[in-house]
Image 1 (cartoon, rainbow, N blue to C red):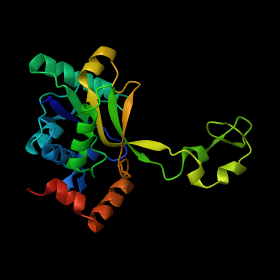
Image 2: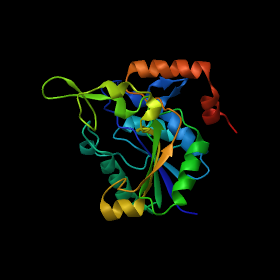
Image 3: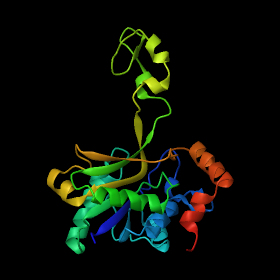
Image 4: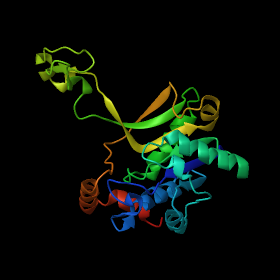
Length: 243
């Protein structure tokens, strides 16, 4: 069996919602939803949280995640990139234990996920070694081909084709190509590819289509998900039940 490591990034400097990652959702800190989903995975060998906060480290260790290091402040900024914390984690693991074969990138801001879906994504990616990474996506409610930009002269024009005649944009969405938005449900990354190319995803990424995913960036998003959980507790039960 390959060595599969889940990494959950949780820096402490959120500005939209202070301490977002430990804010309460459905009776649990937000980050615990991701930790518990990974712990219930049958494919993931170890769950690591990458954080710059000693407080977060203690909280996450109490939830059963490993927090073997603190992420440096210089790669924990608003402008910091995902590859920075991934490379930092891989370098630490290489120096102190063993690098994993695969990394499962789990974003705590997309808390409503099924462990079974995580495992399905991992299995599909491992079975197709030609792909450089896997990214989860969901279909946009309206094709991006029906969207507009504002031209230099201040008038509307279509995206991609950049034409100002908009009548064709009123055609039914079934007549346009389906388009998809990336979400935070699950990414699966190949350590050998990251090391060789210094990239996370590369140019041959496997699409993994999920149901529409709600992500948390604001207090309004928190409130929406609290309501969603109150009317449909199936995901919460799948993550937090004791079985």
